[in-house]
Image (cartoon, rainbow, N blue to C red; front, side, top):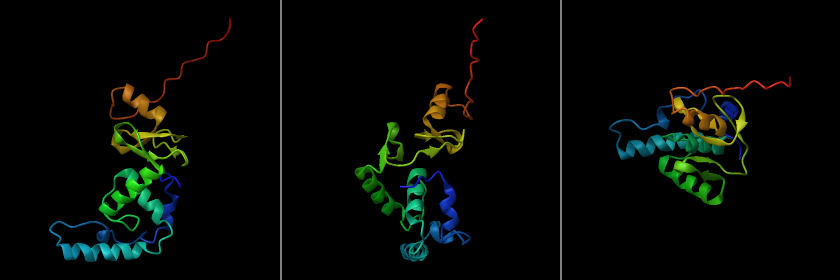
Length: 155
């Protein structure tokens, strides 16, 4: 399974450059209109080479609308299947992260690869070290930078 933190796959998406109206519901939309809109969006997703990456990104980020050729309900079923198979794991607080067989993610704060721990301020996806530092600091509006202690030299 590929990581969704690496967004290079988005450049290969068939929906790139198209209007997003078909992918999201409208206020006051009837069932017939919703079905027609979803069918139009899913048709665009049919031959897309990055459908799996798109669906996984939507699951990890909690996106709504059509993504990966699936609506919210279909993605919820897919998410449960991935959890049962071990491709996704539910961590503390029911946070969803890629399973142990997946590549490590790139932290959106420090840009280092590591084990995904959760979302930080402004929705940043953080690896364990940054997330722990942020939580210990009382969850401020920004992730604190690490404190480097100077090494003692032998006198």
